[in-house]
Image (cartoon, rainbow, N blue to C red; front, side, top):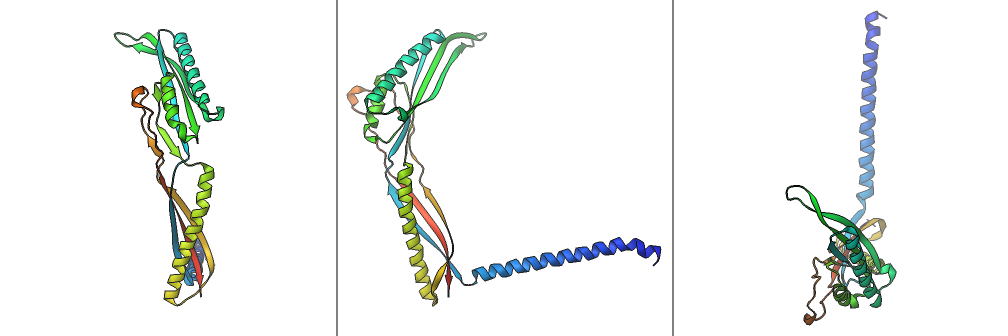
Amino acid sequence: MSQENNSNMPFYIIIALTIVVVLMATTAYANSQAAYSKETENTIQMTGKAESMVTPDTAQLSIGVIIQAQNSSEASQQNAAIMSTIVDELKQLGLEDREIQTSYVSVYPMYNYDGKATIEGYSASNSVQVTTTKLDILSQIIDRSAAAGANQIGGIQFTVSEEKQQEMREELINEAVADASTKADMLADSLGVTIAGVQSSSMSDSSQPNVYYDRMEAAMDQAAGATPVEPGESRVSLSVYVTYIIN
C-alpha cells in the first residue's frame, strides 16, 4: 500500500464512525417513537376537577411596640415594660406560650443630619407574632393589645391548618377522581370502547391567596366598640389527570 493511501486511512475511519453514530441515533429515535406510539395507542386521557369553599381556622398577626427616648437604656426599658404588659393581656385572654413568638427586637440611634450627623435619641422596637386558632377572640386580642400600649399591629393573615388541609385534600381527590371516571366512561361509550384500567395519573391542587388585612389601627376609639374581624372564605380546587387503557 502506498504512503498516500496510508495517510488517508484515519480520514476513512472517521467517516465510517460518523455513519455508524448517525445510524445508531436514527434507530434510537425510531424505537422511542414506536414505544411512545404503542403507549398511547389504546388510551384516552381525562381531567377530573373538584373544588370547595373553606373557612380559615388559623390567624396570624404581628403586635409590636416602638418607643423613643433620650438614651438606649431608657428606650429599651420602657419598651420591655409595655411589651410585658401586652403579653400578660394576651395570656389572660387564653393564649398559650406556643401561640406567642418574639419576631423582632432592636434598639438603634436616631440621627439628626443638620450639618453633621448627631445622635438625638434612641428607638427601641419589639414585636411578637401571634398564631392562633381562637378566631373568636381576635377582636379582643387587637383591642386589648392596643389598650396595653401596642402601637404597631400588623396585617392579619388567615390560613387553613395542616390538619384541615389534609382532610379537605382527601375529599377533593375522591371527588376529582370520580369526575374523571364519569367523563371517561361517557367518552368510552360514545367511542364504542371499554375502559380496561388506568395507565397513569397525576394531581395538582391550588387555592386562592390567603386572606390579608393589610393594616390595623393601633389607636382604638373605645366608644366605637370592638374591632370587627371576619376570616371570610377561600376557594380550594384540585385536578387529577388520568390516562385510561381502553379495549
